[in-house]
Image (cartoon, rainbow, N blue to C red; front, side):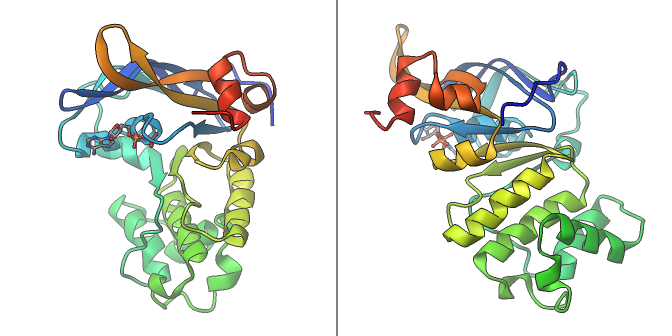
Amino acid sequence: MNQAVPSSPCLELENVSISYFSNVAVRGVHMQIPRHQVTAFIGPSGCGKSTVLRALNRMNDLIDGCSLQGRVIFDGHDMYSSAVDPVEVRRRIGMVFQKPNPFPKSIYENIAFGARINGYSGDMDELVERSLRKAALWDETKDKLAESGYALSGGQQQRLCIARTIAVEPEVILMDEPCSALDPISTLKIEEMIHELKNSYTIVIVTHNMQQAVRVSDMTGFFNVNSFEDTDAKVGCLEEFADTETIFNAPRQQATQDYVSGRFG
Ligand code: ADP
């Protein structure tokens, strides 16, 4: 935790607001997400954590009525400029969801399928092994690669989904509450894996579990709902963003202090 932040951020949000049709879900988010670190988003339900996460790889483009204002900069370029192909963005910035969602295919094909679609022409056996190893799943699956992904436990399925994401060689992995459907032991395995993965990838994770944020993340963004003068509706916002130690031990905002100490609401 609390490593020095490299000078050039991997992802940058500049005054980002996101709406679903005319309802503003989250407003005025500024944030610099450091490279090769783990950034956690915490905060009460409905304050826009998943919405902002999905903005980081243009996944919100697929949601009817969802629109974004402001800029999201990835590696120095505006990710939402018309010259950018959203499919390529999603290859470079992969996503793992709350519920494990393997393809109805063999363990091997779960990995090979996306890589093949993305034009991978190297040694597929080697890629499958490498991806499963990185997701800490190789030892448990090496003798049953032809079996269905559905035959695995929930925790293994989630690691398979992470292996599948890794196989297309992304630079960033977004995780939306990846452990919320898992038991404590499977959760621990994923958390250990996240520690390993940050050597190779930038990771952003939404978690409702504050202890998990403390265990896995270097930086934490606390999202909250706020009232604004120009609207009656409560709107999500980024209340505070800092290194995880500061957020949990010495936050600047009273609302952050109340939330992390359990006095929220
Ligand atoms: P969190 O992840 O913090 O729980 P969300 O990003 O899921 O918050 O939601 C933020 C707000 O946006 C909520 O008011 C929610 O109802 C709304 N919202 C989220 N997804 C959609 C959607 N697909 N269509 C319409 N409104 C949505």
